[in-house]
Image (tube, rainbow, N blue to C red; front, side, top):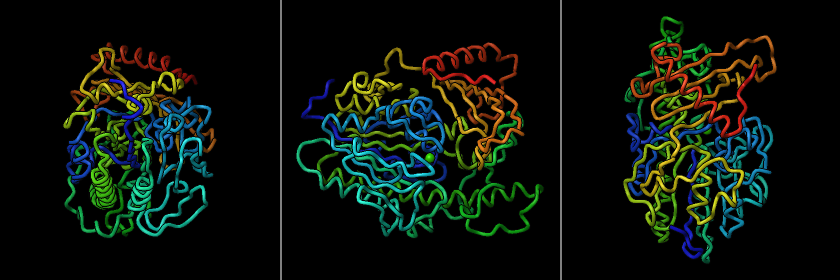
Amino acid sequence: MSVSRESRPNIVLILTDDHAAHAISCYGSKVNHTPHMDRLAARGARLDSCFCTNSICSPSRASILSGTYGHVNGVTSIYSHIDYRVPNFPQVLRESGYRTALFGKWHLGETEPHLPRSEDFDAWQVFPGQGQYNDPVMISPDGETTVPGYATDIVTDLSLDWLDEQSGSDPFCLMIHHKAPHRPWVPHPKHRDLYPVGSIAEPDTLFDDYATRSDAASVANMRISDDLPDRDIREEMPPELAGEENREARTRWFYQRYLREYLQTVQSVDDNVGRVLDHLDERGLADNTIVVYTSDQGFFLGDHGWYDKRFIYEESLQMPLMIAWPDRIAPGTVTDEIVTNIDFAATFLEACGIDPGDELPTGQGRSFLPLLEGETPEDWPESMYYRYWEHDDPNHHVWAHYGVRTKTHKLVYFYADGLGTDGSSDKTFPPAWEMYDLVADPNELTNIADDPAHAETRAELERELARLQEQYQDAPYVG
Ligand SMILES: [Ca+2]
């Protein structure tokens, strides 16, 4: 169905930071309740196999904006800058008559603020870098100011104020980019009693011993038992929990405190999703506004003993994605087809009646609008390609890797690059393969890469990995 210029929909994109799908109740969360996110999903579609192509903040944001992989848009890590020769979807929408705005976290450029551009946005106000939860500093075209209040509420206030200033018939694209639930977690005081210590269910893999994995898992500094900084857990660990013999008790102690803080910050996001939905209802805009909720990647919520993301493993790889658009999407739509963050730009443009092939020719993604309308094209992709570039980053020490995920399997290659991001050459990183059967082993506990019984499947996945690298023109690592 084509979209006439008069009936073009609005877009409201709510993007959070590090919000894992398994901390949303409509995705089956065992740890919290998110009634407003559930309401959004029930009004439209929930996508159960949405994956990021590089599980870290800035790269995912650049992929969402431009519909391209990091090796195309320039943002392969949080230390690299976007290549603006690659167009982005707000820019295309603006050129076609949309009013565009962005409020909250921008975070493209870690060391110096690379701000949103007037070519892309009519209005913007963003945090420098990661941003603060309380009384955040924000930058706009008018300069820098401290905004009193709580960041998640402020970002929604600014967004709805902008919405209320819009008049006339031009459609709009409003991007509401929260800091939450990124570290260091600072909840709003009103949620301080939620999810008390001792009440939070533990994940099945909290005590993963990495027995069958490559060394990449055991050398990563992401363990909740040992690696959470004081600024995240603002409570003194009892001294009797120190030592290897107390790892289990220590893990449990940190897990309850970590999840409490994280889930409380999520609750403010949920409150504010409710505010946005209510506001669109009150303004009579809900039917022809596409409301999207997503996060730049997933997060380990104690899964495999970890916090943070980066790895291709499921909890980090999966992005929550719920989309309401009553004029076009049937309530309660659910799809398990594979989509990724490079598909968002093409989808938004097609929904707005713009041909992404013509207007975003550099884009590598594909519109998943048919999936939202309940139809799966015969040639819909059966796999996705992933690459994490930030090799041996100074805080988390996760090795660079790439891999392929199909509906049933995952193959990963941790490649040896020899150098840490600090440039030191005295470290060696042996290359290693991992492979998981996601049907028989959904928690990814048994690495079958070298199991002769699965050699044929591995060969197929290696061919698929090579095919995807060719398709996206990403060069494989050669030592
Ligand atoms: Ca993030």
